[in-house]
Image (cartoon, rainbow, N blue to C red; front, side, top):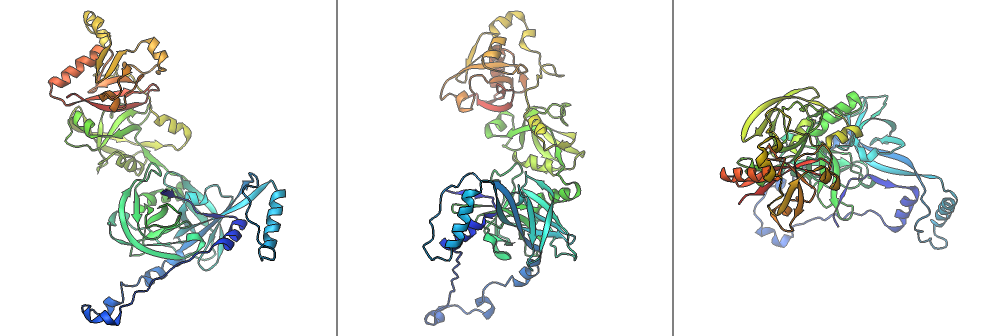
Length: 524
């Protein structure tokens, strides 16, 4: 089974001793030699070419002193004895240790201390150290160990769980060797990189490889934009630097894909284009201060793009606006597609959160949107994204009745009364039945009171509606950005779209709890 590994090397005293009994670390180095018998068949080469690629020893030598080991300890509650190890044979040098330790463990039902090891690097001679949040998370005590053996107690300056970054501070009597950030945006796939860290507790280990890919999304957080590298990264490397060949940090090693826990040549690093701003904010404020747009978004699929008259699937589709947020004044609306933010193109949905988060709070930015088939630019002043639970709840936007907004079409009950009688009858289309959303259906389907529209009361398995994820209790709020209040409105709007030559019907759907999403149902 393939796993994403994002953990430092953790151990207790017992675990270390047990590991010493049952195994050890090993490495095999293969040396290739050219047989004299086949030398005449080889093309002529210079001595330099036969010696292999240029050495990186000089580069590594100048960086090693700035890369540190991060040692943490925390008290955890004993949960019982657990599985018992095999007792060493009589006379074994470890017998006395095991007897003392496990006899004490059986009597002590209190807390025990667990240690972990990770990596980090100094970014300022005054003592600021960068590492991963998961390396120091929950630690009672943090110690930074330098290559020369010096140990300094560290204080946590700030941490950011969304990017898994933390900044520590140590007090040194002399200036420390530091490294500087480089520009990860300049790195290309195939460029050489060097990782230095503390794999399996072996401090000062250097590995080299290339950038295998950029912009990787491994579902580790909301701002995934990892550099992928084949430079060997193992447990204990977390928080260590990934260098370019100028000796600049262009990434912070964070995770690996591994079925066994060891390196298979697929490692991930947080790029400095994202990390540098986070680190600076943690130093300046002890917390992150990210920009906030106040919208809920979803991907633009091919069907949705076609229903909106777009030439290709791109951008981020706004499925809701947070009440009281920066764009609650109508400058951006549900159904808009954000194509560009502050001059940065939004090629896919996840590009938008990254661009917004990197923008300063209070900055006025230009946002290019697609609305009603036309492209336009609006000006937005960003708010601040709060990391507390209340802010997270606000992001779960609920439906806001748009029938009262300026320019919105009036509900069907304000139209011709004679037409209203037939319009209220249930209608069947796309393999589903839609009905009036009465107070009784509000209650029976558990639909939030604020939600208005037409409710889905039946869905046929395998139908176009079912394939698009529609289910009983969903509410159709808008079709092609027009509010619908009766089944007649739904059928009339579908007929209009067909007469216009549209191939898809773009619908705003509200779940029973009010959360919005968009689907495109085929008209052909």
